[in-house]
Length: 431
Ligand code: MN
Image (cartoon, rainbow, N blue to C red; front, side):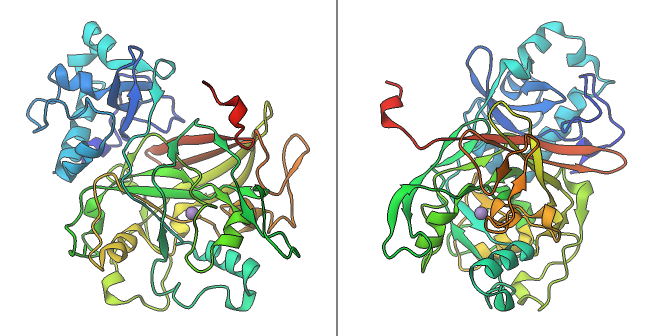
């Protein structure tokens, strides 16, 4: 099926600002509460949210095999399970419905009132029910930086790192979407020079700039996904702030890896941008040396040129951009990650989420965490209000943005914005 939704020459009868992340060529998918408090699956063009449940009930998806309630759900899991042909047919149809030259919905005031919402009339929800969450560690720059700080600059990368996409299983219960605040976690740490661990608030709360891909039902238990088919099972991508408590992480991670320093919160952007919409932004991956084993060898452009940035906004203050990076720097691509994940027969389901790992670039201003930006706290970052940060302070908001751009079109992810609150106080818990 052709990808007619990506036609760069198409314009919409809905207003789209030229700097918008959401032109008619994007057509991402999300879940929101409407002004009537109804939960629905939707998309977005410019600053208009579109209720796909209502569009379907009004007959606009006639001819596409969809169940009646496919969009009247609180998650995209069932729609994603329908597979690539269906996603493509639905995106193509949405593009047609909102094309400037199509009068059907454009000139139907009554239908438009039912289907279209201003962004201030809706509340974004988690787009999928994430059954399983895996986080990789796929940026060579990040792994080298962290290895140099915590182990040995001469042997910063572990010997396995260049041979496989290293990852760990995360926790899905604490994945949240934008604008849900996070409390500073408490836990065990071993302060420098101390003889015994102490319990208390983490003093080193950090962000990790990541992208994450959402999968469809991919395989049965026991069945590996070949690397050259892996992208067929990727529905789309979101921005991911993989919150990390570095002091808790450092003390707990040996020998089984990340645990409580990571699973207190992971924040994602609410609109899933499909892999189809990102097609024009494919680029070559970094050269892999040594050559990976055959089951990890990919052909063609398997990386994506997605510009990323992170801002820190103090309470009532101005935002300061602290990092600019790019998804194309990743050493291991998504197809390799999914092939590696399933090579032992591990099954992957619709709605599963795979984080890329912190996306650090080659320059000091492209590092994807405060750990690296402030080099373990030795080089504080100056904010616009004159204050300094080594890590994240209480009431700071961390804002991540991502977009792709070429001469024809800009496809973006919007943002994920999260405020860090002080340690949870049980007395303040709402009754
Ligand atoms: Mn991570």
